[in-house]
Amino acid sequence: MGNEKTTYNHCPTTKVKGDFTTWTGFQAIFSELSRATSKLAKKKAVLAIEVYPGARIEKLKEALTQNFGEANLVCADDFALSGAQIRDKFAMLITEDRVFGRMAAIQIEDYYDKEKLRALREEVAALENGLTIVFGTGASLAADADLTVYVDVARWEIQQRMRSGEMGNWQDTNFEEDILRKYKRGFFLDWRAADRLKVELFSKIDYYVDENVLDAPKMVSWADYCAGLEQMLQGPFRFVPYFDPGVWGGQWMKEKLGLDAGQENLAWAFDGVAEENSLYLQFGETRIETPAINAVLKYPMPLLGELVFSRFGAELPIRFDFLDTMGGQNLSLQVHPNKEYIKKQFGMDYTQEESYYLLDTKDDAVVYLGVKDDVAPDSLLAALEVAQTGSGEIDVTQYVNTFPAKKHDHFLIPSGTVHCSGANAMVLEISLCAYIFTFKLWDWGRLGLDGKPRPVHIDHGKKVINWNRSEKWVADNLVNHFELMEENGTHKKEHTGLYKTEQIRTERDWFTDFVDYDNSEKTVNMLNLVEGDKVVVESVDNAFEPFEVHYVETFVIPAQVEKFRIRNIGTSERVAILRARIM
Image (cartoon, rainbow, N blue to C red; front, side):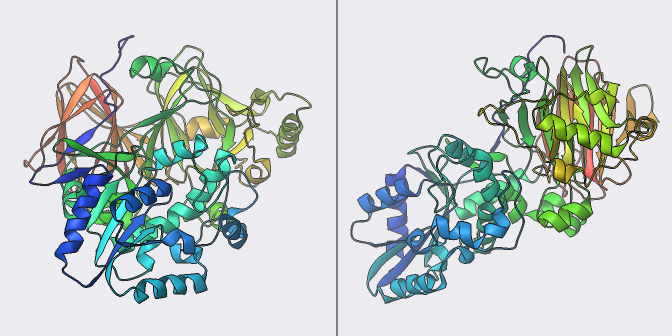
């Protein structure tokens, strides 16, 4: 690729076909809702506006007051527990840790005082005439509504509101609290409960509202929204990527992907994480942004396939993200828990299994992977503890292996393996999605961008380190463990990983013209164009329109797509596709 910028698409969008109407702005939205409720021709009508935690509830309340002066307005949030009560009730799940909480099968109803919830239902039932609008998180709990609206917001946008101090967690006043703590409560509690309620409402929703842009909500009918997702899932699609700076961040993504040159660095890019990314659906002139997890929750079988759904439920367990240390610093030295530990300690059903695929490097790039031969566990742990107190530095290379890293190397990282990328590397990280469970062992004495020490979890890490991951074992099993599958004059297929205990299989195809792919397993595929300018994904049976992919773009092939072809249409003589799927 040289020094040329790529044509990386920052705003991948699915154009929805069909006849539909959209409404933009509160006035237009409420005019339509007024029309729809009037059409019910009922003496008493109940409109429920269910709101995802993180949406701007005060803006909604203000707009409702201005537009529905004659209606009975009831804010469901007023009947829920306060932030202090929520923290007290769920203290065991929230924990005192900055990063880690515990998973539990809580529901939005658990956030309500039983007596107040009963009072809410009685209040709505007692209103005999006219239109009653119940709005807020849990509004649908108040009554069997005649009309239901769902107000949604993307996960990344919620994080931006939290980071800016605009809002805290739902029902809380913790606006200035550490973003890690706010995110933790959302991840382990609020968003889980809200997603469970969302699934329950799928058969009841009438309208869907995108609330991501300040003062510019956009609405489509639920039927049209679902039709958009269904069309998207007929063929390849991409998540909307986002990019984030970090203390160790580099310059590669800024330079190669045409991103904001004003940023000091960019460390992360999430471009293949259903839990975090969003989707763009284009309805005529109106673009709707929606959480990608909605497609997983609404259509798990067409997207994931039976194999993945049976193992993981309605979760897309494969994650692709970028780690940029080109011109930056080492990542934190870290380890991921094994399945037994993560289940017992945090209630997670699976753990993070990952690998580093090197998209680019400088000459001095290395990957830290596994412990040195004959390292005494006590000596490494003691050195980490001393270093963490600030009393001294630690020479990590005395204890941890370093392997030279070059472009297109692939390092496999099963759970329990001490690891990190060194500086001057551009990594495509491929992993199962339990990504929040990273136990940092050493962070090179750095502060985070917020000026606070970055969290280190030696107490957790020391309980899961696999001390048998020695230099020879790692070299034999985890470094460029390529297996040639087939080769001819125009095509070379290799199995590149992951390790045998890991559930993701990765393959790399090098080709000059095209490659036909067989997905007879009917499982979700995640792919990335790791070499080459441009390719197009084609249907061999005209099931979907040609889908163009550019260098380092991650894209998804739904499970229901059984056969597809990828063709080289760019200026590169030879291209390479990295493919990951659950096997």
